Amino acid sequence: MAAIPTAWHVRPPASFDGKIRHMSRLGGGPPIYVSIDIEASMDEVWRMTQDTDLHPRWDARFSSITPTAELSGGGQRFRYELRLPGHVLTGEGTSVGEKRRPDGSRTSALRFATDDRRSPLGDGRGYWRYEPTPSGVRFTTGYDYRPGWGGLVDRLVLRRCVGWLTAWSFDRLRIWAERGEAPERWPLHSVLWWWRPERPRAARCRRRASDGRVMDAAPATLDELEAP
Image (cartoon, rainbow, N blue to C red; front, side):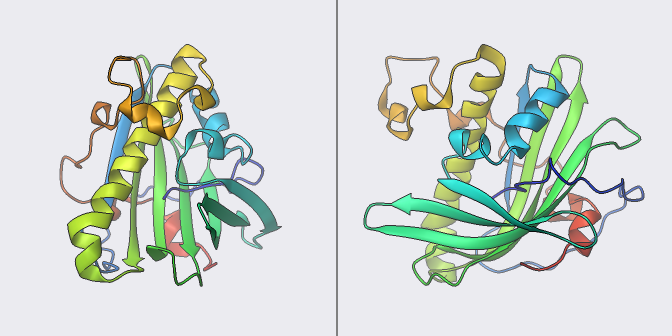
């Protein structure tokens, strides 16, 4: 999961959040971490990830994201869907972004929840970080959630699949930003196109935080974000 729609309503930068804040775990396996370097401008990566019409095109975790209301303190409420064969998973969330930070980076924070008993992900929270690099942007996410199907299934199977899908989607975003190839050119089943080395691959992403502190690295805005 990631921090979703904030481009239309960005709050002022929070105070410096470099300190380590120990956030309680939500159960199941360890928090998910994915990071990738993208050779594109900060504004372009921000646009592709924050625009709710563009986000579901590259992110296989969503079929649609619809803004529903603004938050009083800045940010937005939204509704999301994931269309599966025979069922549509639905949920709600809140999100807020920081577009102008002293170090040139940007952040987006997210909380999400669902009443759908078929959803493998229960309520959760996460963030995106956009860090400038000499060649473009380092785009990173960290998120955690309560297991919808029980902790054992989540630890053994589900969380690994969700992490892989996040990484695969991040590389599909990279291909779109760098090469201009529409995400629809690379459907999920393109993972089987072994004869196409240029296809999206989760292996191009970093999957472990260097210090192991995934959620402690969340921006301060996540602490203050309203519940869905």
